[in-house]
Length: 270
Image (cartoon, rainbow, N blue to C red; front, top):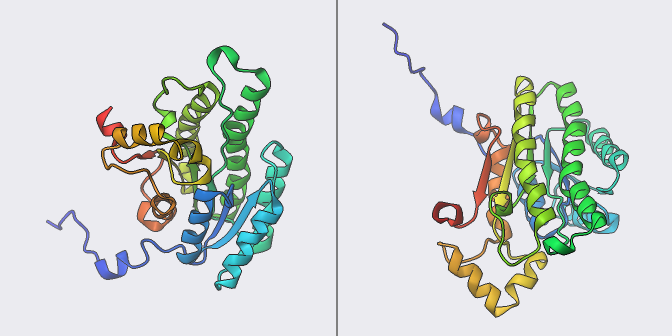
């Protein structure tokens, strides 16, 4: 009887498992603290990178830095409040590079308001930017990925707030949109699997960026954070960047519909 386990040339099969050589990665929100680290990580892994965001000058400045280091990069202005603008940015990136392989969605905002003070305007804006933009960026990306016939990857940045509420703070809009994004990922993974496109999410705890300054500059909240995290530190942008490369590389080709909590052990202990 022939063995069930196939004979594998492991050196050949495993070479390039974490390479993005020849791929095109579109990174909306890519010039923020986490997004910038991811853009560099994907470029260093071989990808051609399009960075997009509301501030076109910031997007182009990061792209210029990548180009100066020898990488192919494009900076684009894109407004996450406009579906047409998001679709146009995806189309421009695909046209510029001649293909589209990876969506790495780093867009997200928070408008902190206690439950009794939540305004319709703030709730709608957070829903638009955190959830609706993810839907229509994914749709625009999928159209190019399906047409290209090469499969691809879609990856969304979430938060541990997609799983936990937060006592004493006004996180109704933020937590609900991040929680909804978990189900959007699962649904899109199911619909895009026949096309060889994986869809996953990364959900970190607090990351050392300017957006977390209000947590980290306050000694009391900083101490509370560290007390909750078993590894005893907050995440660094490079912690997120390496995981993003994994999810978009051949190493994760059999992973879809998943959300990985990069939280230093919080979800293991609460």
